[in-house]
Length: 239
Ligand SMILES: Nc1nc2c(ncn2[C@@H]2O[C@H](COP(=O)(O)OP(=O)(O)O)[C@@H](O)[C@H]2O)c(=O)[nH]1
Ligand SMILES: [Mg+2]
Image (cartoon, rainbow, N blue to C red):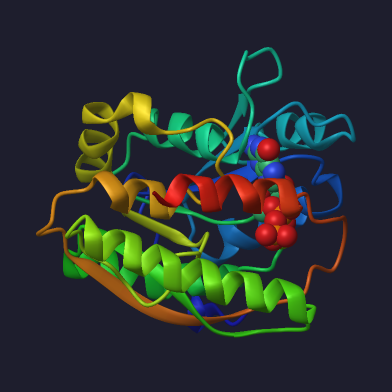
């Protein structure tokens, strides 16, 4: 890592939320990488009951990285990406937060771009995919259609929108997003997987959104858990 890429320690300002389900092959490397890029960053790993050693690896790193916290959701009644992320946002104590996949498909160095936008004062900050590496045609098509329908859905609701509603790389001013969540707590469906879109659906119209670009990388290790069932849940959640 080039030290010029690192920010000075900002011990209390920034939390990165990593939702995980069986990410043992990625999680330790991800925690180390993020801590190097943003020294002193707080990390919440929101794990939904992994059985591959993900949780054990996070616990083993907690001593070396005191700002790392495991939110172990194994015993919770409801599982799923949306609820895992929502609960992690609710417990965030720093001024800013970002949500990021744990599998390196979201380039961790882009957290510096995110932090810059957060410090500019945008309510919400989102990484916009300028390109997706090697997705099969059907997944690109579904993502495109989902984006068009999502924008339409927000337009009908007269809500603020952005160039990539399907991005999982997003965050914001913690108190702003926490207050959107607490006023609409019941609307966050446990089965959904696009948290960012669910938040925009219920957010105030004058919300400001800052964007930065990134390339959605291929997964190096482990497998995707997002199948056609969750995509169907998303389509149902549109209207
Ligand atoms: N907590 C939690 N994390 C999940 C769940 N499903 C996927 N994830 C995590 O969410 C991120 C994105 O999931 P992934 O399967 O890579 O989806 P894809 O990149 O859209 O194919 C990864 O860090 C996964 O480990 C879930 O049900 N609960
Ligand atoms: Mg992935």
